[in-house]
Amino acid sequence: MSFKETLAKKYAEAYMKKYGDRLAQVQGHVLSVKVSTKTILWIYHILKVDILVRPERSKFIVRTQYTKKQWFKKPEFMQLSQGNLVIIQGVKGKKGKENSETIQVLNIMNLTTKKDLIPIDHDKIKKVQQKQIIR
Image 1 (cartoon, rainbow, N blue to C red):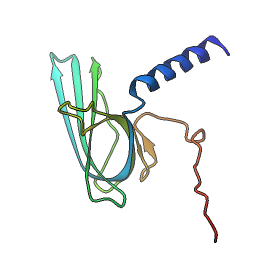
Image 2 (image 1 turned 90 degrees about the horizontal axis):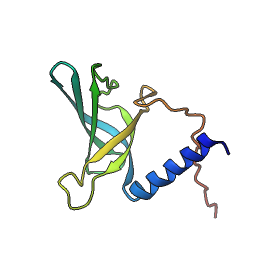
Image 3 (image 1 turned 180 degrees about the horizontal axis):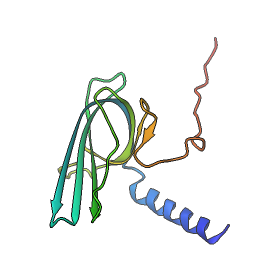
């Protein structure tokens, strides 16, 4: 293993140790998207996006939140519309805190338009097939 691979592996293990029990993934249709921006002194930009998702075959609604802070350049967000099918990957809030029910977004994959918030290589994602039991 090279130094880069070893370092990446150590970072991944430390991240899983810290957030492993709080990692969450939601797949469903977008109900609403609320984008709010705030600028401080024309150089510090804060982008806050609240997304409500209704998971497939479910009655309840999941609230997710994406926050991006950036100096000088205004942060951009992907195009999301009501009814789009998405997969949202994120971290749940800590239990006992005020935002324990919300998911802090790490990545969004829009399956309707085939776009990602953070581009990833879809060839590396392994497709999981369920085995059918024939009787």
